[in-house]
Image (cartoon, rainbow, N blue to C red; front, side):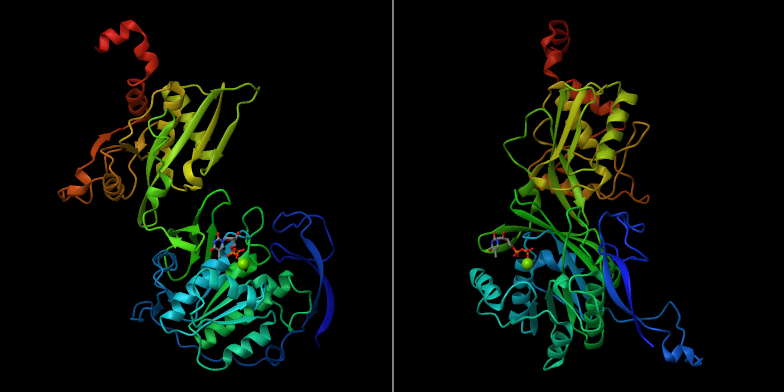
Amino acid sequence: MAKRATSFVCQVCGAVHARWQGRCDSCGSWNSISQEETVTGSVPSSQRAGRKGRLIALEALSGSSPDAPRTRFGIEELDRVAGGGLVAGSVLLIGGDPGIGKSTLLIQASAALADAGHRVIYVSGEEAVAQVRLRAERLGLSGSSVELAAETNVEDIVATLAEGRTPALVVIDSIQTMWTDSAESAPGTVTQVRSSAQILIRYAKRAGAAVILVGHVTKDGQIAGPRVVEHMVDAVLSFEGDGAHQFRILRAQKNRFGPTDEIGVFEMTGLGLREVANPSELFLSQGDRGAPGTAVYAGMEGTRPVLVEIQALVVPTSLGTPRRAVVGWDPSRLSMVLAVLEARCGIKLGGHDVHLNVAGGFRITEPAADLAVAAALVSSLSGAALPVDTVHFGEISLTGAVRAVSHSPLRMKEAAKLGFTRAVAPEAKSTGGKSSPRDPAESALALESVASLGDLVAGIAARSPRRAQRPAQAAQEG
Ligand code: TYD
Ligand code: MG
């Protein structure tokens, strides 16, 4: 017999507690537990009956399986992040702050698929049909054959989807607004979100339609409520950016059908999201270069090189404890670079505030940015501007050595394409013995190899204006 019970469910992680408490033991979030009514079923009758299991055919790991067929959106930035297009029967979760442009992206993606002759259904649980229409009109998409609905009940939605031709794509905007008759708790609770997602996922697998779920994100960047949903879906994408900047980045956090290190770059314009095919141009500002404390970093995002500007400001501190402020990079990585600068090069920053900023609001995750950060820090401290035609990349180890990083040729090629002429980087690893001739585009860049952080500091110090001011040394150099 199924019986009703009251349980206390954490709205962040879905953990169930016996009584109310201020802090969830499972995920550590405060004030996230609320009371929910659940129907606890007893053991299903099939299990109680002691049924003998059906035999499953076991298969070898080797063997041929056809590649999952993919439907491309025709929006290159989106296709790349999705791993080359939508896989039939797969479920994607797209998370992002409110107002970042999730609905805009998805209506544009829906229209692109519909224009290619696929059936696309867009279910909005947040906006009325008229609002969605208005947005489509503004984007110039009102001629598209996307089918719209404003609905929040999952059973009604699945019943509607079962009618007619199987859609290639179903967009559910958003999963937090959905509710199902099968769960007793109030709409918006974890139990409802989880049950609704389960029903939609089951539909996707059964019908072979791709489903995209939109999820809201809390202040600390978690997809609110349905953390549990992240485990159930095939791919989790996050749509990032901030209100102060025009561009948005779509990043794969988990993908069963593709790589997770790819990004898609878009720009929010008055006419919706525009693809940015060459993000480097977006992140490099001409104005700041040539000022002390600015270094250009040749980075990689997935298979794509991206050049970004790293800005450092080192100023004497006015407080007892120096400030370390970082935007767009890992603060613990900055502490490490500062420690290595002090221990291996004798550069003491204990009496200085350090501010580090990745220009344009970009977020760097690669350790290969260490060298560019160190260059920006030393440049700001010494007042020596770095040459404007130079890019930096390389990982710094605790011993002060500079380690080679992956994809050096690609990074250099991109830098050469954008008009840079010099790269300060470690000597690239030899690739498996056979010495291939360097690509002409890549060799347009002069490689100034640095083996240790000391080499980098010496190189920058040689350009320092403070040094040139001393007449004796100026004479020596001259
Ligand atoms: P929206 O897609 O509704 O965000 P989300 O679904 O993630 O909450 O985007 C809303 C924001 O985007 C809004 O602040 C206005 C802006 N916007 C544009 O700048 N240009 C456009 O063409 C559109 C449709 C929206
Ligand atoms: Mg929206």
